[in-house]
Length: 439
Image 1 (cartoon, rainbow, N blue to C red):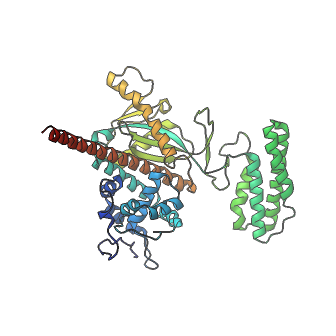
Image 2: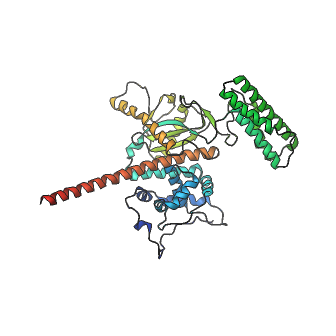
Image 3: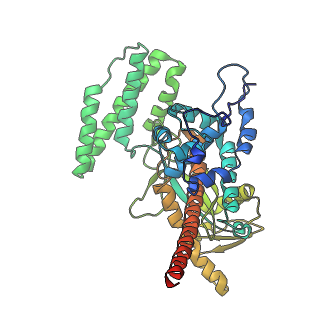
């Protein structure tokens, strides 16, 4: 079995000093690098490489460190690799003690590593973030027993779906695929369909919906003709089957059809209405979040497909949070969307619940504190727009978003703690200076 490479820092360089002797030892990333148990990752992920041939895989600490840094700062695969070259603190965090001048990996390697680690590997990274938060004093063991649970929407990186855009896009993809395979179609409808799609936009802007509906019907006719023409000429050719199946779904779906197709490249995207006035409909999947009541540390972040009822997701979310933290949850604060939750073994307190003690009423008021945390995960993290492919990509992005949020909280805690110590230190120096002046 080809084992992943390890980062060797024992060798000295004649003309290069160590980063550990030059960087600020009080920098939060320096301390965070020592809080994480990297050996567990190397032990748990080494079995993912069963092959005995080929180039040795990249160091596991390097890849896991880059994934953590990427979701702490909400960066793309390309940007995090570029910043890694420029930032010595990033390099030290990933295990290097000498400044590196070359790219550590190709950005496309992160795509393959995410697939290899899958959601089970991301669970272990989330567990390590919870352990690091406990080790640095951000959370106490008692805080892990009282949580807030809520759901949000993880939007997919797709354009806003319209019938005209989907129908014309499917026709264009089929025509291009047929041309690439050397199949001559009876007619491609390229010019008339493009003009028809342009008129749909104009009629919609002018609110002339009858004319708009006629043009959408024309686009559906064009797509249907291209689909039937290709079916006659290719038969059961597997190259066309996926795109033909999506095109048939577009042709058959209507206004009240369930499980509609909203994107050709992301068929798993769903339409979810959360009652927001500014955004009535969002396209992606639902994500269930479990956060500690006091600090807002993410204990569970799971992507849920099929737009399930919030109350039916509570039991699974609490079980996942217990597995991640290793502490049984005693009390849960939820909103009114969790009625008929069917949870046993934990006290569930819902918004608007009456006959509560003063302490529980005060604790219930903090239930809404989960909302700004969700906002930070969407604005600072990558929960607001998911670029990963497929259902597995939704689960991986949800977990890594929780990982990034936890490490941001840890870094803020470490920064404020060292700032407090620095202020105390300078106050002591000032007092000593005053005493000297008096003498």
